[in-house]
Image 1 (tube, rainbow, N blue to C red):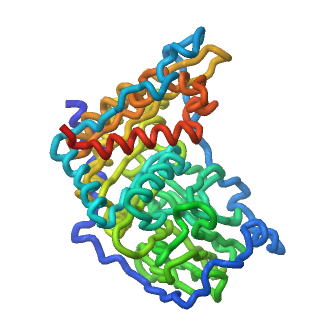
Image 2: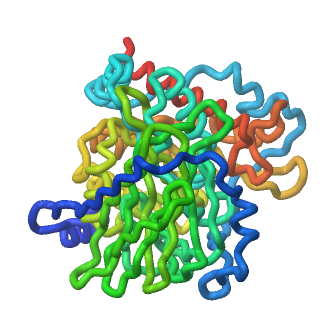
Image 3: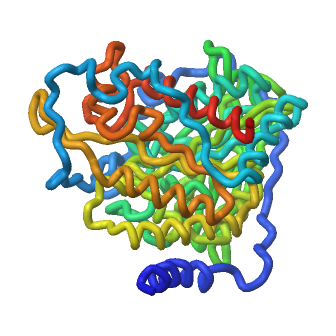
Length: 470
């Protein structure tokens, strides 16, 4: 009975917040910038930042790194390293493949995404998650693999101004001033209005000295061409003018002021296929809030991988995102496969009971399933450790029950589940990864090295591609 009450308490706010009628049509603005000269000969990020006569100040004098809750390893089982070669996951390449789990019809729907990709249809993979996703290392490797097989459909989602130091994107050039106010649910100096678009994040500035730009890659194999930028901005009372500049050209003004309720606007900037830079800056006549940009390339077929991650976050943040804008954004993305990669932070929060977690995850997947019927996968929590001293570590025992809740709730909502911790070698494998040669686990015993993310991405993609196989 208690479980039912908790689930209702989590779901009822979503039902009350949901629009009574059909989701309003998303307002769109179309800009033809096909006469832009292309992205050659533009100043570098360092040069452009150095040219500023005065620097914009960070909002409130704070850095934009944000704060994280310190985990408590009290009572967790310990491992003392005597022989590193005997640790779980130390020999990662000898581990058996970790398959997707889920109802047969769900696995068959995932398999069909790859059948369509092989038939030269455009396919989109949209990832939401915490720092594993926000770093765009494992999703970046997946983007490479998918685009290498099925073609480059464009980079997908990115913010024009990083949320914090360490928030990055693969195969794309980014530049930002420090005056942007980054925002996500529960951030210390957040707007606290739930207006976070469809990725759960935004950046805002009123200072005309601020700018942020996104640019196609120059030297790597992928991400070297774009035919349109899809920019998502907030229209609000007192909103300012957003200046968009393609390849260093004259600013194109986009008004974000509104007399009514806040709403999201999709601004499409069309360019000729090739390398381009899109710069965004406030005009200085009011706040400009940006929810993100999707960089897409025209033509038939190709894969797009959206990486929408925020470090330290949990799945329950979704409950607080304004539902209309979330629905509109998912409608625009129209993902063919959705992946939610949360759980590592939930496993570290000893105050968060499994009953509460189940209720919150049920609410999150209810929100997801209201927005899209695309096949979905929950990529479970990775193994996580804590260093007491050299050779003596704590292991997060909560990771296994968090994964079990995901396994059960995923099946209830027509999603598959992939056990990240099991793929690594099981409980304690993060310590094994830390000692492995080459090293796969980072020194914080939470994240992976670049090689570790490559390894886990390859295993995850193998599980996706073999979904539904006998």
